[in-house]
Image (cartoon, rainbow, N blue to C red; front, side, top):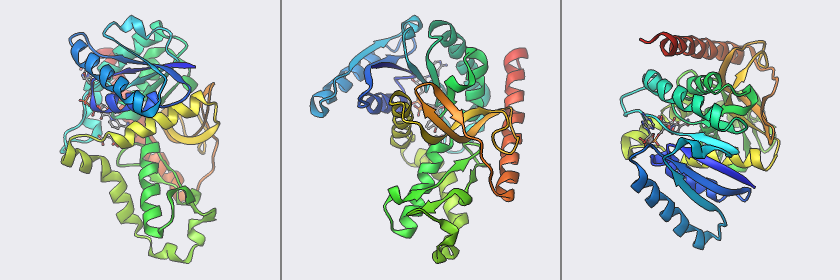
Length: 317
Ligand SMILES: NC(=O)C1=CN([C@@H]2O[C@H](COP(=O)(O)OP(=O)(O)OC[C@H]3O[C@@H](n4cnc5c(N)ncnc54)[C@H](O)[C@@H]3O)[C@@H](O)[C@H]2O)C=CC1
Ligand SMILES: O=C([O-])CC(=O)C(=O)O
């Protein structure tokens, strides 16, 4: 059984993640962490969560704290703390402000919970994952981010809807940045086990429209209801269940790569990774030449901004 802590638990994503995580059978403690001053909100979130348990039969302990030392003993810490973008902002606009928050928490988490996994949600998530890796002092397989798994879910829904098939019949992935330079892998997309380009109707797929829809999904939801919550909240729970259940599923997460994708590396970015109780292991893959070029561009963009952010953190602005 495991303790999962959420840092940023008073926020929209943190609150829904608490609910989705509490329903994972391997979790026996959900800890809600918030900044000093957020005691009353945390208490309310905990009570509301516990009220739901009678309906779902959930048997989990809920605790809350504003004392960072209480993260001790966590098996997984989910970091959702930080600012969220406004509809007219890019995720990258949040980089400097959130990097300071993430670096500070990661340093503390590295000391207080050295054996925990650290899952990054705060945006821009690929860069924040690298900040968390560096400042926590944890191993690369212990630090990962919710990146293009969510984009892959969005693409999967769009493809299932176009072909009018159940989502479980669609396997697909988006790799690269959780942002504009994301790269769909059509070469790794199947419907009912058939490679998508072998289906005659593939020629009718409005690929550009679908990718535009996937890329703008977060922004559209933020513009209309203020935040994306249920998509990311469920995706967070899937990743945690995969670790705690030692499931060895291959999911696309932001992880540190060295040379797994055509020798491109030294960056945290969305890649397929085998995930189990020991952590997150990027899978060596070979993809089509155009996909390699697009991935290389995405990597160069994220690596460049990550370096700038490291320099800001080290030297100040
Ligand atoms: N990776 C992904 O797929 C997704 C990432 N996100 C990101 O998650 C983050 C949280 O989003 P929401 O929950 O919608 O935002 P929110 O504004 O509802 O919650 C933010 C949380 O961070 C805390 N926080 C803010 N500034 C802080 C600081 N200086 N120190 C400590 N804690 C601080 C707040 O107290 C609150 O608990 C954002 O960066 C957002 O962009 C959101 C959805 C999906
Ligand atoms: O779009 C945002 O800012 C939140 C997010 O990352 C997503 O839902 O994909």
